[in-house]
View (cartoon, rainbow, N blue to C red):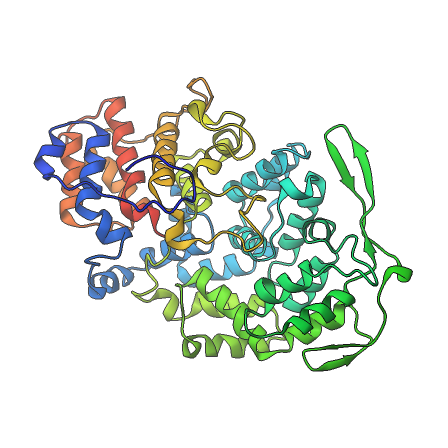
Length: 507
């Protein structure tokens, strides 16, 4: 691999060499290279993929189905959580995840509220704290879904309070009505600034929000005309976002509607004619059959696997419409469906940097250190500074999507630069080096003495105890045998190999 810019289109390269020669290097990095040489293309690149029968056998075990669910409906799992959920069983686990409003998450709120809000990285740190520590993982996963769909950028909005308020709106409405969510975000101060509803007025309507509302948020390309964009833009005129000056940037006030700046004339939009306002535009959009298919496709691709057919979407689209266009019933139907637990869905998604990094932290028991690892200026061991830290190097900083289309996801998450960043991150995390100077801040507990104990603990937790025999043997040979008592360096190296395994990059 060669280093490059996060998000660049450099393909992942796996150097081919004999397993014996690589293991002769005796280091964890050399052994990890052996794993990627043997399994990298097969696991991450789709070449020579394992037979569906192998995946089906793994999914016969309920603990594997539970782990699969928790990767998709959250950000990974800690050992205590896995033990608790396996004891509960799959059905009870689903019930708890889906009924998140009944779960007390006040401790997570306390941890997040202890951090300040400003115009720099603090809103990002607050959210990362919630993702890593929440007892409501599906609510946070849905909050990220909405942020990735209805995007805004902190660097453009320049008000951490406004971005925090938007984040809270997504969290509170995670399972809400899609029309209501669109109406709410259309009145959100951060969104109004980001896509120029603020300042749009009669005679000079700005088309940015109207276009993205249809193209990216709710309808999809090919389901509207340029005239529809112009007419919708007229409907969103008349709003202003007041600003106050602060030492570190503007403070956005509550949006204000100014009637004299609003175009209240007759408009024709998607075949509907009248004195249409913002809510009328949203209602008209969400009543289109294409809108139902669009949002259900986004949800299916987020939770199950990419590129579903219209036929695969149909039963979930029916659930969406029958449920009053609410999101909760669709997510529940997806997570309870046979297709969700199918071999095609298993390990079918590449983890985002957030999923990968937070999953590693949870496995190491370092959830409380998430801000230091991911958002502290300088990052661990001198990583890139500024809001985002290691997350910026891996290619995903919350509240900073690359553009209005959000993160591309999928194979775009992995290139030579971002893969190096992931492996550097787990190296630092497994050694507890959480400061720019490489000082130990939070040494992870590694509660095992031998390779046998380590594999018994971490293979089920991290890899569903579902790896090829040759990969398992590589881990054993690195450790010096199943029964060898491991030095601290060997313990850290073995955990590094497990967290760096190709399969751990898959959700």
